[in-house]
Length: 274
Image (cartoon, rainbow, N blue to C red; front, side, top):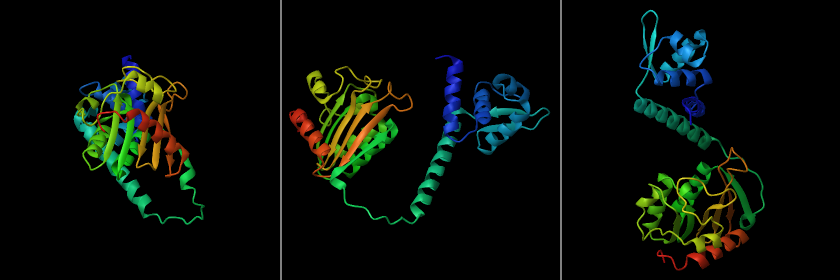
């Protein structure tokens, strides 16, 4: 990836944290130099000089830039580690505010038929699916069946797996391939399945690891307490905006839950977790 592509990628990510385009461009430009004037920032970013002052002023309010009030003014981005901590605090504070506001809203009453045992939902995006996987692990009461490709196992998910395995649960966990996070899992918690087992479950029989599996292949299979199931698949080639998609099913008599549990039980029953 070129420097220009890296910069564009960072600018896009900073916008996701609430910075406007000019603000993100100015911050990235300042992170590349020790210090700069508005004219110099404008030359680096193509942001109009008159807009640089507004953008940098906002960045100062956000705690991301320092200003030296000379003539002309000189601007400096704060240290990278400090900037990341500042962004994290701001983001977490906003998330907490959203959580509290949503929690304070009175629930609406809608009459609905009980369709629990026929519920089947779709969930998109690796982050959202990881969060659902972690919730299922945390709320499991009795039993967890899980096969996951290492490409979808980040630090938070691996911690959730280890926490669940250390509780009084029956766990049957297989990880396909490895990464720096999954390598930390003890063999008695998770094992690497054979290629034959992978193919029987719909996973690609590869080494796994840093990249998502081939398009359309399974990324994770999970059943908790014989009442909830999660099936994830790679969608990178189908939809570039979504890296993973899943089907979530709930209900003790739900056909999807029964099918996935039966499939996992038949294939993982001889694993080291049992």
